[in-house]
Amino acid sequence: MDAPVPARPTTAFLDRRYMLIVTAVSIAYLLLSAWLLGFKTDQLWLIAIFNGCYYASRPTRRFILGFSIFIFYWIVFDYMKAFPNYLTGPVHIQDIYETEKAWFGIMLDGVRVTPNEYWLHNTQVWLDVLTGSFYLCWVPVPLAFAAYLFYKDRLQFIHFALTFILVNWIGYIVYYTYPAAPPWYVQVHGFDFIANTLSNAAGLLRFDDALHVNLFGSLYAKGSNVFAAMPSLHSAYPLIVFFYARKTTHIFFTTIFGIIALGIWFAAVYTSHHYVLDVMAGITCASAGITLYRLVLMKSVAYNERIAKFYSVITK
Image 1: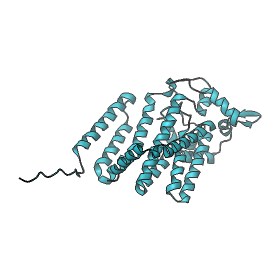
Image 2: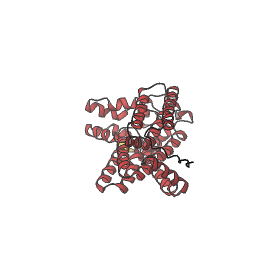
Image 3: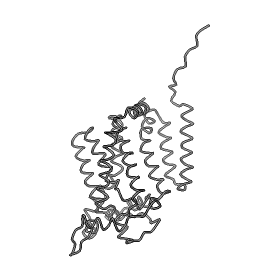
């Protein structure tokens, strides 16, 4: 009697168990999203893209599994609409405004004003277009850089993506422990707290007006939370890109990323979306997240074992 042949590990492109998991997760996401936020076509597009990439080919499957880290970020950010942070504590409106003016105030016609108010009285069309262009980079640039790392150095891609998520979690913790209104809120509503205030593109509308488009107007109509100005994650993201670019790209591209970071920091204040305090907090969040990831998590044996497993998933 012949000895039984040991079962070989499956190499089939479509594995029934994983197909069931992907289908179940997709349906669960749609149902949960509809319950928390109501049905939106964005949710269908996300599921269509994920499933399309997952089933199209092995390379696209590896790519979408790698970028599932960023998909998770997008979902959590979207779900913030269902759990507004102004329910967790008093919203800081006047106190942060007064602190900004005391620390960074500028004299304008004999009156001390915040940097946002100064620029509101000194706008230039070329600055409107320039700052709007910089602000458009805040998500596309990290995603484009992540795609570059995915094909150049997959291990660095994982470290970059997980640092990105860690910085976001730090930012979210601050959002819910220190709800804060942006400068444009004071300009429109004063110091009174108004729950469920609609998001506002503020100074970025000048970009739309200059180019005769409705880009920022439509983007900010989908804003997740008005009272999440502190810290400015817009300011955190380009710093993460700059840090990892120093290790993986030519100095030319590193310089470009540095310029983009500076441009976004200035644009955040110029367009009245953030105080200087918010920008500094965003830079601090990014620095803290990078430090914690590099000096604590990457030193953990257990953590590196999980990284190795994920690496194998997106490379095999």
